[in-house]
Length: 191
Image (cartoon, rainbow, N blue to C red; front, top):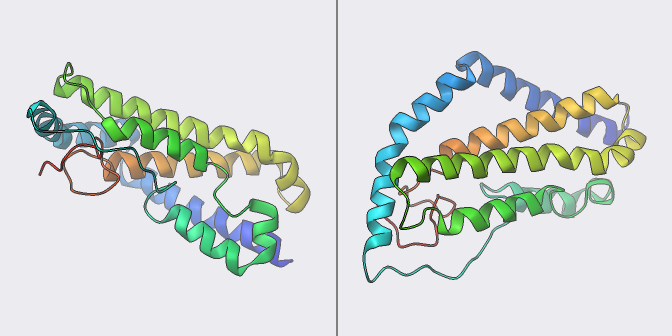
């Protein structure tokens, strides 16, 4: 097995393992209900912070794909030339992450209530997931040529990546956490 095939197969099995354990841990609707119960109070705190007359929205910034994904990708691309030649220096779905960051930057509006803010965040997270999955369509020609995988396996890999990123932002992107990638990160921190 070539190094290229080994690296793709390794990534596939890692994502499959994480995906399987996520499904075993809890069904998707139960996962969403737990997030909502925990999160609504945080949206109220963000809305209160936005309503403070001295609160101002900071200029937009983005780290690409948060949680070290873009940074890690760049590091690997810099170390393994075949990885960079096939996959690029940045994640192929990084534009999806930046669009997601733009929505997260301002988060809620002053007209929202906590339930609307929650729904808007969930919609942004679903759009991220969909965008990541759709990058498979633009990359399939290259990936199917480079790796010994079927079109169905490649589709499964991208669906898994999209689902894992969705779950990561659902958990890690809640407002008022102090994290730099939180919902409403352009507003002063609310804890």
